[in-house]
Length: 553
Image 1 (cartoon, rainbow, N blue to C red):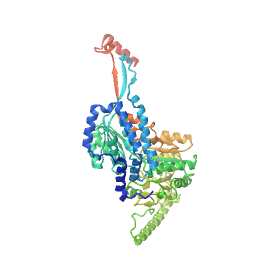
Image 2: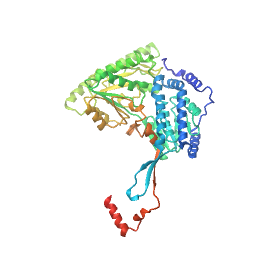
Image 3: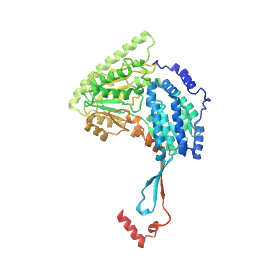
Image 4: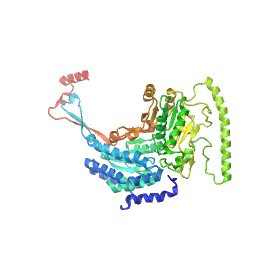
């Protein structure tokens, strides 16, 4: 793969659009107000409630994806450098599967479901029915710009809603192509795409949608929730967090390493449920780090930068953010522009590293002495230098290479990371995998529970007790034993967070329910009028009947 450079973006995006829709009329840019008013009018007409309409739109979406796979893959590659095979496997195919899954079941999910009535009300009948919430807003992120735009939209259509999609401005090629294709293939009065940045998103949040579905970071998630609260609009927030991965010595390390490497470095680590950090027991920590490095080599070759199967970081800001999480001296703070500056930068980094090593050697001696009498240190902490690490981020086991111009960061593994290191203070969302050494399951669980609840947690252990402990004693959006990302790719499993990692869920029936209101319906014939026995005044027979009811309850 050629390095993805910013100056080629315009030309590539233009070529993608011409390839996909060369016979299509120019795309009409829709404002938030225009979209909302049109969608509200269409929903109020009742058009979207029809099962025929729902089927026709899901069929249209499936046709849209089938007819434009190449153009969509090229657009995602232009934005993220993501290989086409990965886009097909982890985005387009998953949307197609979700559409097929809900299309076969949505009539049954929408039908009446009888419910038993209280004996006091007999004869009487009760049932529930699912009705669409109305006009819904889907705000999608840049990291999986097809999957996380279209999968919630599929669930919303299956439930009978009108949908406004606001794709991310950080993936412009994909967002613009989606807007054009949806306009070409789908009902424009009931499904609209509003392009733009924060200004347009803020405008949309001012309208009284019936549900808002947001995928992204916690900071914007709070803004979305505050805006929704002013209209009492229900929200689904799919956020993120630091998803831990525990590994002990009971597992086959080769298979474990390959699965962790796949889960972490797919999409260059820019996956909300990727293993964010590893908690490894001391007996296997270094061996695991080395085997993950081997797995990276198997997947992407000696130089992942030249691999057609390895992606790129979304933009310069995130490249710099990730560079700041690496051990000091790994990457120069800026690209040197002359041999003199290069030499000065290298000398400065070397002096800084020597100084840090001298300071941490002194600190480790102090820490070691203190640990004799103090065993209250935080979980996962150990003396610097114990695993050859002289920076709190840990020792660089592989990777660490950065090409800012190409927005490339190599798959990177760190060993001996301290829990208070900068790389452990935020969701990494990139190809950096720190390994924190913990003594046992107890220490791992204590470290996890000391942090906000993650979107996912993974456990690689053959110990039944360890698995039971993680299932019972930790809280996360999902829990995977021996498998990362598994719940992301199944329409039968609800996907969602807990606490700061999100609220609400979707996929399959869970997604249908998210975009539906379950309405309770009761019916009782006027004859015989059995309710006359509980009408006031409560004396005589009625009073005695009330007493009997009280004793039976």
